Length: 262
Length: 168
Ligand code: HEM
Ligand code: SF4
Ligand code: FES
Image 1: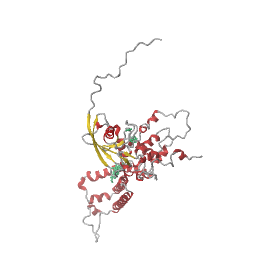
Image 2: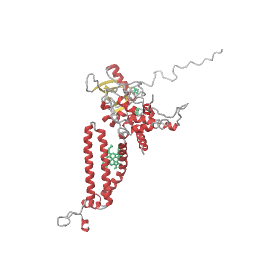
Image 3: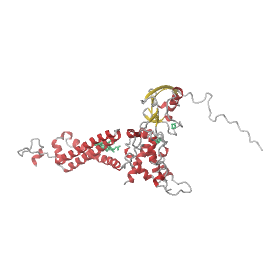
Image 4: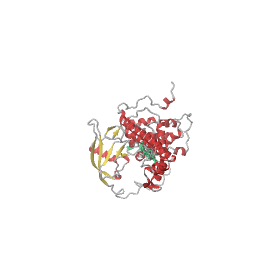
């Protein structure tokens, strides 16, 4: 057995790096965080807490919250899982806008003023930045967010053309973070409105050629608290971290309800 | 065991959500779903009446404020002259009804969106509906019963009557 001719040893890194390493130092700066705190075990009143921390140009609001929690005040409470915009746990109001804390770079904010962090609105606050998502999922469940197909299962997959798949592509991206629903002024008032997220997820099945329950979902959303409560304010589209055109999806469902009843 | 169709579709029905019961009910959808056909009709009406109002209002503004002597022509006689013509009677009547129903429904929406308590909502809507009815009824009566050439007790035209009354 012949040994293969000896190759030149691979470099430790395939990227050609200079001796000093990296593209220079990441700039650091001071950030003042103002966080809305609420702890029902101590007080029924919410309050503001403020901390100033040194952060880097690559850091996000989530990193600043971590720094506070890990190094200054361990009682600060918030949800996060993936920390990379996938799980939808850390929707919060940052400077008055609903965002995922893990997707907002500090350097993109106006740091001459404190960064305001509050829980999302319209859902019951449990502690600090954690809200109870149950009312949000209640309306999500009501629109039947699962495939319904009454024809016998084929031996292979249910075939769909690229065009048919494209029809509902946008609304498949939802991660159920509730940023949209809790940015909607109609939802804030009494929480009776189904809310953008439920409609987005109904849209995902209504316009899926493989699904047979579109009519039932349209019926559910042709409710007194359904699609007709939408005032087209575009808060939801602005809030969505997945860039879903939420308001457009709602409008398409409105049209579908309308043409179904005519 | 037989399952009805809706049982099959909604497997979770009847099972309580894990943490239900300890959430303030004001946050939960009350679930008594009411048909939204009225809301759908209202939604369509806002768009149709809005489109009609564009034409009605801009012709109204043009004829009253731009054509002829413009803003200086408007007086009692000008209005009386318009309402002597059935076309303008009909025009103003349509504009009155559409604007009041459109504006009234718009205000109803705003009340629904912003009133937090059911009682506040009920009061505001009662006042709204009452004022819409009063204005529509009064306006309609004025358009149809308007009499520009009033006579005094002795059968003479009142001095304030517009000039065209001499020819009637
Ligand atoms: C000039 C032509 C007009 C057009 C094209 C128009 C169109 C519309 C439309 C499409 C809506 C529904 C908005 C929604 O559902 O979110 C609306 C709402 C409304 N309109 Fe009009 N409208 C007109 C004139 C008027 C007039 C004359 C009034 C007052 C008498 C009025 C009062 C309202 C109010 C109070 C609302 C509710 C506001 C809201 O829902 O945000 N509009 N209009
Ligand atoms: S539509 Fe966007 S904002 Fe709304 S829940 Fe889904 S991912 Fe979040
Ligand atoms: S932590 Fe998962 S989306 Fe932000």
